[in-house]
Image (cartoon, rainbow, N blue to C red; front, side, top):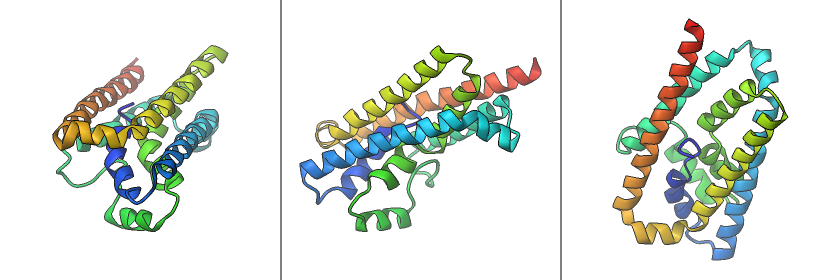
Length: 195
């Protein structure tokens, strides 16, 4: 969840939909969540083929994914630092403001299913062994997208209730969890290489 980071997407989502009605905003959230499922499922299903095509090992994915997750998490822990990870540049925000539909870009990609999420899905894809593994991972993708839907759907209320300091604390907490996930990915990759 900290890799997908709907909490980090909240302020951008609210800023880009401030002139939308509640119905339009909810429609954007639903479409973004569905796009998220499609994007992550495509990378999950095609993960082994992608890795074979580029000659990437599972341990390489784990280490690279861990580094990427750590970078995204670092910027969640230190939001004042220079932008990184799946944050949007000022040019991206300016372009998105002019768009009527932000559900695919920038909301679904890169905000919800960015490089960190894709790296995790590729790693899981390459370590899946049987039908139950695939089913559990697909259910996890659905649950993550469902959680993102709920978080963004209640975002206007959450921002009012939590305030800026509450949102910062929540983002930092998710950043710390993400940092731990990234470190564990790297440890798993290096341990497997050593063995």
